[in-house]
Length: 225
Image (cartoon, rainbow, N blue to C red; front, top):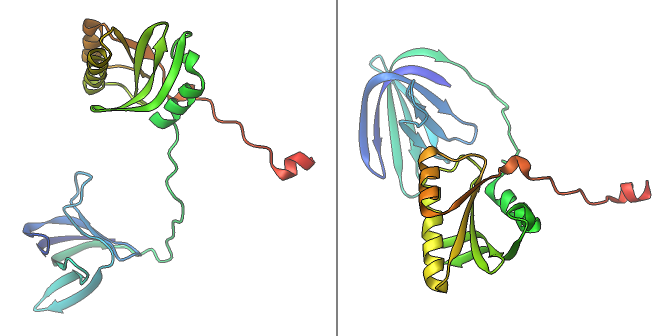
């Protein structure tokens, strides 16, 4: 990790230059090269692996070269004007994969297995029902009325309410009868709730924390035990 003052020139997918400024340069073990400014989370420039890195020193100037010789060819040059700090951490390793929990899919699958949590009279007809406007998370009936359910694992905003309205309107026109629309999320934004009430759509508080983990299967050791 190199913290330095530098200017940057890049060529490859496009051409760009960045004037002198303080930068944080990361040289990752897989040869990825990333340049950050002191603010913001997006890098100002980067080179994905495989990247060959070389350094030259001439006429009092240090230049860091990064090149990707695979197509498309890319090159980045960092003209280092002053080094603020440098640290090296050899032997870094991370072999774990990201494991997502408590997602909309978890909510969908759990509610599909427990449709009474949507409504005591809800009868599930389909999961991820395909329509020209997209996929209904849950589709079924309450009594003689068809129902479309939209799920959100986080606070539902106006886009979620508008999406549910579009689904309900399309289904109502397609079936030529009244349709119930239900938005289920742990919370809902004020403007989204206003739209739901104006359109006769329902909001029911339900989030990923209500999803119960699936019971673990019996292992061979457990069976013998």
